[in-house]
Length: 488
Length: 115
Image 1: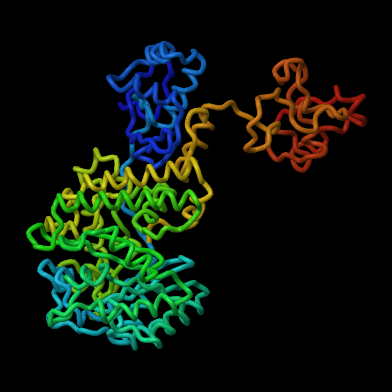
Image 2: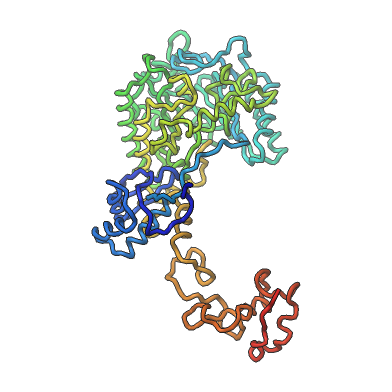
C-alpha cells in the first residue's frame, strides 16, 4: 500500500528534491515550481537546503545537521525544512504525488474562429492553408461562407458557451476582408443575439491589410473590432514571401493602409504578427520598423510552421540567431517595464501573463477545448489552422461537435500522453506545443514538438528572469497581467 | 512563509497552504492576515465585565479552568447565540439559566447539560 498522502512523523522522513527550475535575476534568487507553475523569490537558506540535497536524498536528522553545519541554527533549520516540504520544494515518501489532469467532461467554448473565406489574393509561399505543407482539403467545398452558415455558427457559439458571460468571435480566412459584407452582418447579428442574452461579445480579425478602406477602418473602430495585421517587416523582408500571384510584393499596397488603420482605429490596440522565415529573421530590424516607423501597439513573432526541408524553414543556426535577438528585445522590454512603460514586444507580455497566473496547461492551447474553428462549409475544426481539413474535422455546425473525435483530439494533445515532456521543466507553459505544427512535422497532432524544446526552455527562462526582475524592482507593473486572461 | 515570497497567483495559493500547515492555529485574537507575534489565547470581549465564559486560566489557556465547559460558554447562550455545541436556548435548553438570575452571584448554578 502506498503511504502517499498519509502524514508520517517528520523525523522519519527521507527527503529528495522536488521538481523546480532555479533562476537568478536582478541580484535575487528564484524558484519556479514546475508541477504547480508557482514562482517564489527565495532567500539564501533555501539555496543551502537545495545544495545539501542535490547529491543524494537525506533523512530528516541528517538534513538538519547538514544545514546546521552551514550556519543555520537548529530551530531555523527545522522550520525551513517544514516549509520546503509543505511547498513541495523537497519531497518525502508521504508527499502527495502529482495527479494526472483528467479530460474535462464538458468545457464550454469561449472563442469561435470563423473562416469567412478560404480564398486569398496573396500567394505567400509559406501559407499553411495553401503552401506545400497544407492540411486543408478544400476541393468541392464552398469558397465563401454564406449568411445561413454564419448565423448558425453564431447560434452554435451562444449555445455551446454555457454560462460564460463573455464570448469572442475571431474572423479569419483566407483573407478575411474578401468577405467583408458577411463580416458586417455577423457583427450585427451576433451583437444583437448576445444583447438579448445579456452577455458580452467582442470581435477581432486577422488580415493582410491589402483591402482596408477608410470605410472598413471606420466600421472596425466603431465596433471595437481588434485587428491583427500579418506583416513581415520592412519592404525588402516583407516582399520576399508575402507576394501576389504574379510574384509582386504586397508591401507598397499595405503600407499606406496600415498607417491609416493605426491612425484611425482608436478603440483597440493594433497588433502586427510576423512570420519568421530563413530570409526574414532580422527580428530587431523588423520590430523597429513595425513599432516605431509604422506605429503598431504590439508586435508578435513566430517562426514559420513548415516541414524541415522547405527552403524558407529556419534551421537550428538561424533559430539561434533569432533567439539572440529575442533576448536583446526582451532586455529592452525589461527596461521599459521597470520604468512602467509598455514596450510592445508581445512575445514577452503574453508569456508574462501566463507566468503571472501560474498556468499549468493540460493542453498547449485552447484548440478543441475553449476555442473552435469553423470553415466556410460549416465544418468544425479544432482551430483555424485545421479548417477545411477532412481528417481533422470535429463535426459540422448544423449537427454539433462530434464528441468522439473531439475526445480523441484532446487525448492525443494532452500533456500526460506526451512522455517526452514529463521531465521538462517548461511543460506547464508549453505542454508540447502547437497541435498543427506537430501534425506538419510529425504527422500526429499529439506529438510533442521536439524540434524546438531547447528554444522553448531558453525563452521560458528568459521570461522568468524578466518576471523575477520586475517583481523585485517594479511589482506594480505586473498588476496588469493579474486581470488579463492568460489563455484565450 | 519565511524563506519564500510568492510572486504569482499560484504561488500565493501555495503560500496559504504552507501557512496552514506550519503556523499554529490562530483564532479570534489576531486579525486575518496580521503578521503579529503569537499572544495568549484571549478571545475578544473577555474580562471587561463578568460573564461566565471566555475566561482563561493563569497561563492564558482554558485547560486549567475548574468549571465544566458549559459554564465557560454561558455568554454564547445569553447574548450571542451559537448554534452548535452549546446549550441552545431556542430549542434544546431553554431553561438552562433559569436558576441563574444574576450571573455574578449565581454562576455556579449553571449546570451541566445532558442531551
